[in-house]
Image (tube, rainbow over all chains, first blue to last red; front, side, top):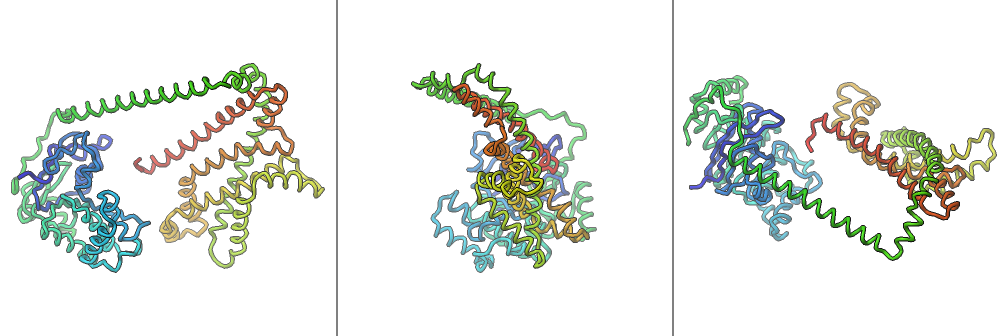
Length: 248
Length: 292
């Protein structure tokens, strides 16, 4: 079966600083892949490259078998099929929660306004935010804002959902509500790639954990293997530090 | 795939060479870039030719050319216009500095909080409302013709009074630009500064204003260029600026070319101002690592 996402030999550097170095990664349908690794290991850059927010220096990215790093490909068309959620939520502060969510469905996907609203309200109801539909983002807590941001990505029915450290800006109490939501999405078969510092969560929710180091996939496997019996010295060292910091 | 462990990276690898795919992409982008330049060149040429044909082919072109673009008249009128332009420049420098200072002070006064500051706030607000509303020419007439009528001791010259009229009018515009900049700085910045023990004044001076001024540099420049053109209006009260000098030349030669000369000089005068501001803004953005 064609993987949903296929990255082959990706290379990306910023002003001579090599961030992705010959990185290869496949993500199968319904699979949840957790990217772990130190800051600067290339997790976020990989997600941004997949969403074509950054232009890669070399390599190939396929989405559902389509070569999306071909310069002839329309990036907007690719992005319509990929949802991305950022660490800082990036909700539009001048729009209500409901308008944030229905912006792309009505303007990009040309759906009827009432239909988009109904779908948005259904989603908000599911994540317990139906009463916040008319609020502006700044009146919401971080966890609420991040759940709205995830809903905003989901209403476009993406083939692939990219989550870039979505809980890093949240306090521990609010992390739970966002992680619960992601766990539910996994139950529904959403294909996801998440960059995360939440090792415990990666262990619970991921089908596969990928350890990035120096812009390459240094080690990957099922969570119990990567966390339980890491093979590479760098992975062992990284996980030891995480344990020492009390994050696992 | 699952469960595999990749071999460790070889310690010494050959330096990176673009793959065939990447070379293909580079070639495609290069072709696209060349194509874009060609299209731009062709469309510019077409528009240029059409405009030239439309203007020079117009039935009255020869007469317009003779009365607006006479090279000899231009050369002859240039010294007088340049002489007038010196007045524009002097006025511009003093009025720009004056209006920026007035604008900044009024903007800060308008942001003061608390009941004690109410009268100050009210006066500052009233000033910006009034002088953004009154036409500049009326302020100029009142200042240069009305005020001397008071026959007070030590009345300054018409030129100074005209300059004052410009400063108070433009100060009101600039105050609003500065205020917009100050209010665009997030309150968390003041909170952070106050939390370090800085007073409100220090927080304004060291944290808020530097960011605010940088943010509103482009609109400030806009108003400065507008001021540069409006300083010439003091000629209504007598002093001879570049435009007035051109007007005199037009009256003497029965030829409109001096107006064109003055216009070109004003454009040339604005260019360095625009260039400097763009450079300052760009440099600030680069230093803070903002990406374009």
